[in-house]
Length: 54
Image 1 (cartoon, rainbow, N blue to C red):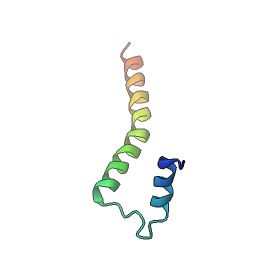
Image 2 (spheres, one colour; image 1 turned 30 degrees about the vertical axis):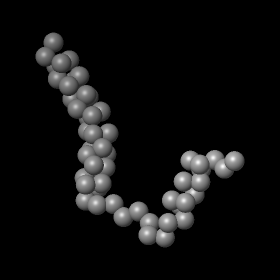
Image 3 (tube, rainbow, N blue to C red; image 1 turned 135 degrees about the horizontal axis):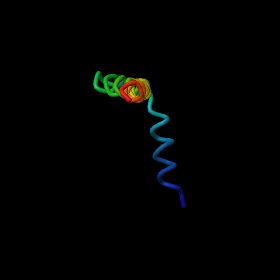
Image 4 (cartoon, rainbow, N blue to C red; image 1 turned 120 degrees about the vertical axis):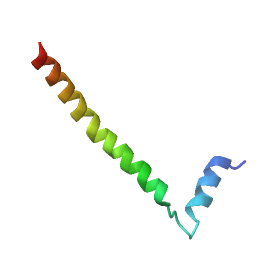
């Protein structure tokens, strides 16, 4: 009895057209990367501002 999810993955891997993402794909990942880099910077500035105001 074949394992069907594995067969589906292998069939997709043998696709010769490949994966060609559209502009929305790049915009999404640009936002994700920006959030990953920007969030710690925002938190550090927020903490520093609160310490200065005390």
